[in-house]
Image 1: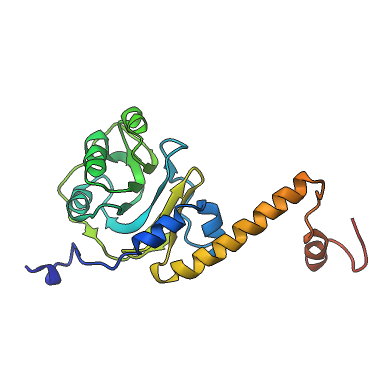
Image 2: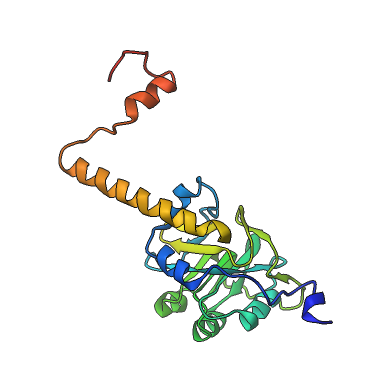
Length: 230
């Protein structure tokens, strides 16, 4: 079977550019999620093993059957430096899908990080290593390596639709996926939002406490009558 005919593994994908990844890494996941229309965030169960872990890069998407990590090994073999392996583990935490050995392999291969909607193990070693790993939980039980999965196909991970090559950003707040073709425009919006937020924070510290939009929003919601003020 040629690579073109392989229904399980796609090697050739179009990635978000390294330049855009570098720019995006300067923003919080929260800023990017906001400008993306509050879309693309993974469920809050997917968290970094350490609050200091951050990741940014193009997605290598993986779909596995719960408790089996064979397809993750395939992804590790074909991923390029800077890629982020993103695994649809179905939210199952009955068995860990990676541990110290696989995270060490990923780190040595130049992979930017691993995000799994599933469990991992060897948590102390993974935290000490510092290689970014995000998961839905922990479990000492190891996985099987015998069930076919898929690599680099469109998938849904913890409620977020992700295409291979999409931009992945993760930090202490969680993970957001941005469509590859939308990234340039979203980064422009992210800078404007960051500037506006910094201006608002500075205003609060200078004594301008109340949100300027509050009364209008309350009137629109019917919580204040027209002409009524707080």
